[in-house]
Length: 232
View 1 (cartoon, rainbow, N blue to C red):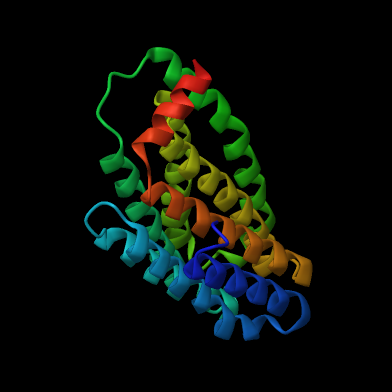
View 2 (view 1 turned 90 degrees about the horizontal axis):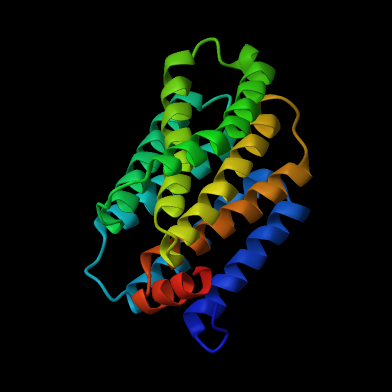
């Protein structure tokens, strides 16, 4: 973030206000604060983008905001809608990663590394599902699609970074890691044991995701070259 740019300052203010709301007010109050972080991040995108406007990126932000509002209203009451919205959200992110990465030959060891690193992720989510399974009896199909696309997004982000260590892939991997951790907290907070600190962590992670995906969308080829030179 550049503190000399009004749009960046606006996002930071919106982010701080949203965090303060999460800490000191009822969770429902986030409905009034969370949208401002999305609006300010989109303003930054429109002002600083160097490529044609990505309709998919804008759509992902709108879907993420709608899904986030439903989470605030209560995941138990809107689990089907949340599953559908965030499944679309992950599909869009998968597409954004695909179009950003050139089709290069993948070495066999890349698949090995991805498979090896995916094992703990799958194990953690398996245990999470076991913990909240009693809440999922009526939405098994919807939730299964959600989990499939979410894990596909996380593992694909890992795959693209191992395959091609550019800064853009690094930003999306960091966003995916934040999202993976955030979803564990959401599952526990909404379907197992609610606590305010969990809500604060979720809000913080969502802000990090917004920031790093924005970095991904505003990628600079010079940054990619600098990172490759650093890693060589």
